[in-house]
Length: 76
Length: 90
Image (cartoon, rainbow over all chains, first blue to last red):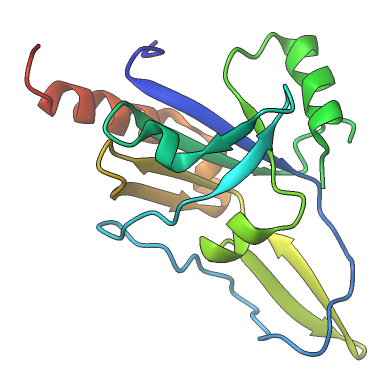
């Protein structure tokens, strides 16, 4: 495995059915808007250790493997 | 949305050594275009796509896969290895 070269980040998301106002785009076949070659938007998220993790923390230091998991069965 | 506490329990349960992140306010999902909405009976619902994204040290997206193919992380992992091999030896 390549633990030293790639930092795996997992965003665990349970599906959420909260209505939002007022109206957003209907999308039957959802596609990501992010493309290869784009600058990845910075983010600040809370880790499972309740620490703030920013994408920019890894700039110039590590490649980042970002896995977005819906319904990760974390029990949350 | 899974809370940090739920993620911590999950990480402990299966021995995960990398950070599990919570996007409680969905900002990151929106900025990455991963959060999608659809309208049904006068309500809008949102859900996130499953996705694997590889970002290099310069912050540039090098690999994206979404949907069913993103369930298997091996292609993204191979991309990480390729990126590492491209880097000059120190």
